[in-house]
Image (cartoon, rainbow, N blue to C red; front, side):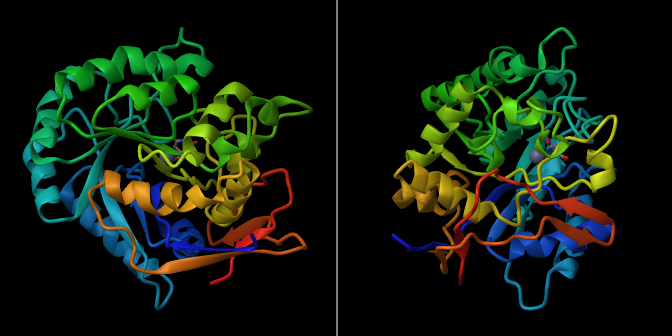
Length: 345
Ligand code: DOR
Ligand code: ZN
């Protein structure tokens, strides 16, 4: 097969940042994707309805002329979040989800949740109105090994919250482990996003032969058996699993540093990488489910009305190594193999 026409994909987990970075990287997503769930971890975070309205306006202003890309806004859950504000933002159609960061888990998560009892009223309200909760699923305890933080989170945090709120619709963001895949498969009212890079790299890619900071993200990539479980889940067509790139730009000096930031920037070549992974598994026919159909179904939205066509060429497709933004250069994810598929139209 050398061409594949699918419903236009969406990205159910995306970092667009703000200011010059937003302007520089937004075209990379708007080119191929119809919509994206926009992460609220700005500095300061997008906490209230008024913050989300203002951020949405800035995104719309930064869009290239003629683009029909639609940002799907989220609110950042804090221990002071007002259930009535969340309900109003949902009723107006402004937000499609609320994001829960355990305090300290990742980039700009300091205002996240430490005491889960404090957010109980918000979660109850969300369950009542049918608003999904997106989890950054890692514990932050210093004594828990970074490679175990997702599995421990499922036991200690996810399970009690889901048991207390069985009607709450939950998304486990950027699942990175077989434990996570198994948990989601067994759970009611729950889906998971999978990133492009977690379908490709393992922890060896970060650490063997030298530290490769552009492969460092959170949750950190795990050993191959976990990557393989993610590939099996994504390529299976199972409606519980869908694309959330977690494309998370940081300028190169902040990545290539003695204490580098977490995040892989995959917006530019995600569809090419995914086509490669799905073809490798003999599952190209399920790419549309993963990238274009399962996500909208989870969020109760229609899939996009238009299509894209991917083409496979004999010679590898060239992508820029970096996107030069007004904030500085951002390195594009290197899958480590030549890419032959590209979005042709
Ligand atoms: O690698 C990551 N980068 N993981 C996250 O959860 C946050 C993101 C960011 O905002 O840079
Ligand atoms: Zn993220």
